[in-house]
Amino acid sequence: MEIAIIAHDGMKADMVQFLNNNLEFLRNPKINLIATGTTGSKAEKLGLKITKFLSGPKGGDAQIAARVAEGKTQMVIFFKDPMSSHPHEPDINMLIRICDVHDVPLATNDATAQLLFEAIANKL
Image (tube, rainbow, N blue to C red; front, side):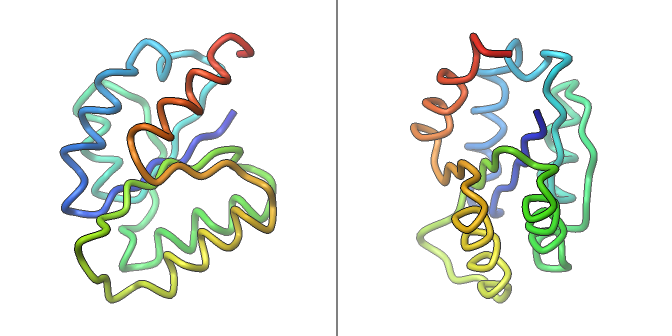
């Protein structure tokens, strides 16, 4: 199962904490993690194996959306910063739309992401 992780700058610490709380789950050999550039670098510091794409503003969100559309990515964890505006908002909205169109689970906060992980933990 390929899971994408993305976090806006204001949410990167929250993402690192979430990943740290779920290290055992994420180290399952049946899980393949992908991420936008900076988020992926932070996840690597936790010892996770990550395939990194461009940073979000430079096209990473679009690269991950393409993988969702191609059926390669089965879940997206995207900790969006609801208190900030982002110059690449069209890419963000496109990724959310692609997840909806292709019926791919998308979590935009810790609570929802945790529920998704718990729902699939015993199925891997």
